[in-house]
Amino acid sequence: MLRELGAEIHGLSLPPEFHPNIYSLATMGICKTEALIDLRDAGAVQEYLQSIHPEIIFHLAAQASVLEGYRDPLKTWTTNVIGTLNLIEALISLEISSSLIVATTDKVYMNSGEGKRFVEENQLGGGDPYSASKVAVEELIDSYRHVIETRTSKLRVAVARAGNVIGGGDWLPNRIIPDALRAIESKEKLYVRNPNSTRPWQHVLDALNGYILLAERLSSSQDKIFESPFNFSNPENDGITVMELLRFFPRELALSIEIDSNSNPKYEAANLSLNSNKSQALLSWRPILGISEAILLIVEWHLAYQGGQDMQQFTQSQIRKYFKNVNK
Image (cartoon, rainbow, N blue to C red):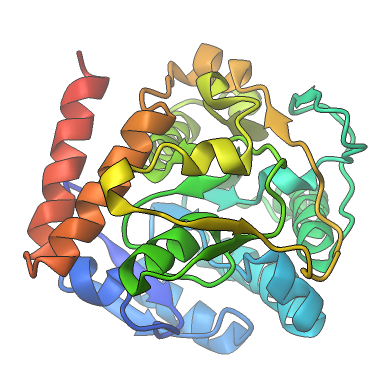
């Protein structure tokens, strides 16, 4: 999406953990420079940022799985909190004007499971290592606003809280869409652990378009309102359960589903919903992909991959069609 908008892109990341992965298939060569660095390595982060002097930074790196958070809380906390701390410190040390968008999560809100639509001012609170670490990231950012002022830094920081993001090219384990696609490909049953849970589902292109609009406003306006959290979620998809989501898969794919009654009952909120009126009002952002369109784009992406198509070209074609619809 950034290349389509004419940006000069530089990338900092860990190496791909799984194969296949969308980086190897669709994004090779897009970045002018790349660095394979762990964000917990403060010196390496600072050295790389000094070599590129970025104007806009999208901080998307995280340990982003609730279940992995239970398995490895130390990695989750250090990656999410210390990694963010190292990034902010490195940006302050550059002494240039820059804008940082930090992606946290819809799971930062104190959630009693009542199904309320959370607004940005609602109380935060995490009930598991992943969610709690992301709450800590937001507390870190709030505290650093004062640090930035005292150091007379020109860094500006905004937070993006997106709903459950789905899209083509996701093979991570313990995620409902990748698990469903694996079940279809192997002709095995998909075991669902929380069939009645609702999530604020949205396609990745809608969420990323919101991040880009937030970055544009943060870097072009001096209004302090943009240095704050913004929710991104499609209200059309509110209240859709996991089972209802899976019914949008085309019948010809023959997805077979079974409830997993033996799943480990770790804490995950039954209902989650976001109010994104602030993003729509202040950023002129609007989500355009409902669940049926989102699932169709995902299925088309994976069928193209299975058919051996050039996935960089195919992904770019989906992005161009998306931008045409946004600009209608």
